[in-house]
Length: 161
Image 1 (tube, rainbow, N blue to C red):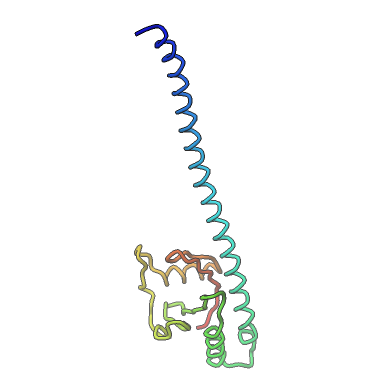
Image 2 (image 1 turned 90 degrees about the vertical axis):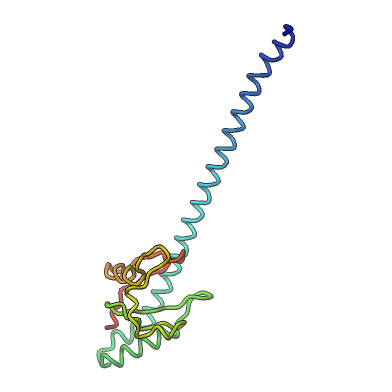
């Protein structure tokens, strides 16, 4: 191989290696940064949804507080009135409220009224998690959020039974 070709090879080879390395590092960092930004965006979106759901639940609690605190109402009348209020309440474009007793019996479900009175404690999602049991366990802690089917549900502890 002539000397000129060797010199060109010796100068181009390191240049190509450095260029390829810098390109790979840049692409890797861009991909990592993109994934990190998506994760941050997702977390912020979930936080915003949680805050909106908390506000909606607070409004629902305010809507029934007069019944909940009215000692002149008998228990059955109070329960019926709270159920009626929760059935009519909506939030957002497709949000609604539902209620279960501590045994997993549905008390309020404005979208699927055929579920009212049914014990759904054994209801499972696609991953095998017991949905109503998870909701009830979380509600026993006071309040919180549970992610079901990719939807975030905010829970408030409220005893209807």
